[in-house]
Length: 266
Image (cartoon, rainbow, N blue to C red):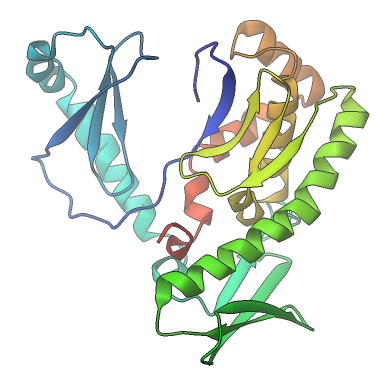
């Protein structure tokens, strides 16, 4: 999560990436961030390591810092790669045969209560995603072009998220007495959701893949940002007042990318 007090408060996710073999040797990239106040190390699910530094940081110090954190990096890198291998088989599918949407399913429920079957039909016309009765989707068009097929499926997810998640957000806003201004749904690469200083809330359609309680936590989290545009003690106190068991789902959200199939990011 972003701990700054900038004009946007955001919930982060790690974008899925191709698994890399575990190794005791690793390379790392360096990125300077205007918002960074200290050095941070980020490990992606593909095992890649990124070091984020403040604008004026002396990068000559990095080799020594990386050497000190080497054991921590290797341990967490191996854990992420292992967790990724345990994900559902559809994770690896480039053109999915089904969509497992868990946003209505309790965390304790093993299977999602929304399982959409996806079929493909070649057609010379534009590529479309057509909803059919019985929770079925037909992708019709240039089905040999995987990225186009995935794009129309993501567009369908965006429309569905707007129909399903935005009313839920509005109801929670009313129940919790935390008003916001304008909702939107997007397909952010690194954010589950965000709240602007104008109290506009943006939701990621990938939330549809997460269990019900985790989505609930994300919505409450963003609504609390309408009062506190940071992650201060006062902010977390407000979240606790509105959702006393939030910390359970906050921890689950840290690995929320595991629920999102790889094709969504392709």
